Amino acid sequence: MSTLLARIVPLKPEIRLAQAIKQFEMDLSDEQKAAFHSNKRQSCHSPPNIHDVMRLTAEIDRRVAGNVGGGRCFGTRLVNVLEAVQQFAALGDIVVGGSQNMIACGVWSLVRMTLLMLVNASSWFDKLSELFMTVGRSAPRYQAMTLLYPRSRKLQSYLSEYFLVVVRICHDLLKLTRKSMFAQFVSLMTESDMSSYRSDFDLWANAIKEEMNLLMAQQLQEQSRHLVSISKTSGAESYRKKLEDRHRILNSCSTYDYQTTWKEIRRCGNTSWFTQQREYQDWKGRSESCTLLYSGGLGSGKSISLANMVDDLNLNRKDNLPVAYFFFAGMTFLKAITTPA
Image (cartoon, rainbow, N blue to C red; front, side, top):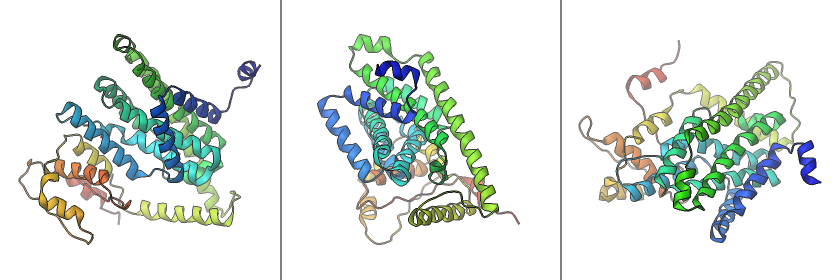
């Protein structure tokens, strides 16, 4: 009877997402289930932030370098998608709460576990990271998401559909690891599979983008007329205003995308020579403000070393202190800091 009803009345995307996470969990070993539950509880108690994204990508590259050696760098391919997953998990804590928070944090924990589990399987991980890099260019990452998410059931549904695709990919790869080596080879993701996944991602990413554009246009109209259409408690309204103020200040500053520059430099290779240097260890361990300078000729590897330092600092953060960094490149930087008259 329940199956018949499900066919007649489609389940809400949020329910299907919760079911997909549960199905993934059922295919885990007892040890993996324990690790999954532990990470999900931790994420619900303290939602992931951008530093958790950077720490995860750094850990992935560290493991890749240890397994296969060489200069291959996969972590930067994953940053955009992981930021989208992290923002979704943070949304669950800020504006949703309850069971929705468990679902959102479940997606983060599931993706994290899948990536760390498959990092040893270079052929799969290469395909997965390439797919995530491609779809990451249109991944739903919006500064205004926290402000607009509660206002639109469509936006909430579209986001659930998007992350349902993410969960489905992770589950498909998990099931592959349960097969024999021959079956794994036969079942390896084909270009047709990749194309199907990309199509699903594009469908929901475009739907999210259109809804966000509509909501932002509506918000501008409301602000110009001094209308308030969101019914909230005074505490939540105060928090919303604080976010708006922060976004306005941020948007008034340089629009230069230092994160993209860091990713481009980081892709050039892995290095850890600086971790063996006493000067670097002393600088990293200082509690007071201090400066570490590296000098060298053009092409000596300064930028690549600095990009790798960001990973090392994220992997070894103390007392949950944030890691701040800024990379710039020539005329791009000069153009970014030039303000109109």
